[in-house]
Image 1 (cartoon, rainbow, N blue to C red):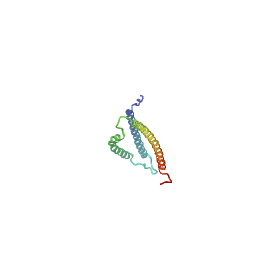
Image 2 (image 1 turned 90 degrees about the vertical axis):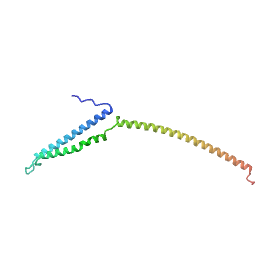
Image 3 (image 1 turned 30 degrees about the vertical axis):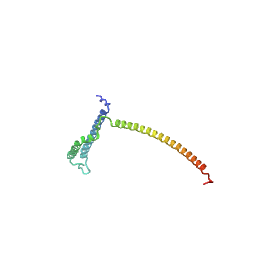
Image 4 (image 1 turned 120 degrees about the vertical axis):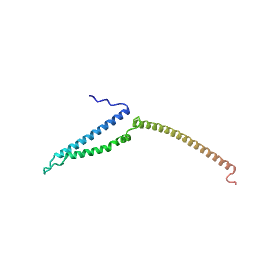
Length: 158
């Protein structure tokens, strides 16, 4: 039997990955529980120096361990839906695609702002040139006024 091809659209890929992750996590927990149970049974077979087993009643320890695992599962299982709801995307597109689109729009807007700043800079430059020309003209006018005053009132005559 061959494995099914993984899905190609974004929503299906995300759902597929989430399911695979959940199943691998569940498999890992089951393996851990089995390893611990086998460890308890082996510890029940190992004898101390005095001839007594390390665990007097491995069956009771296994029952206690399984009760503890059951209690943890009873506590965690109802919360899994809440956890999934908090972690899983509630929108149809991939979050990365959404961020890429928003980043592209921000870059476009920044490009527009840079152009606006360039135009303002050009206008400020033209205004600065205009102000400099106006100041030079005023300086020439004041110089002519001073020359006229000197002509009208020669320095030696009040």
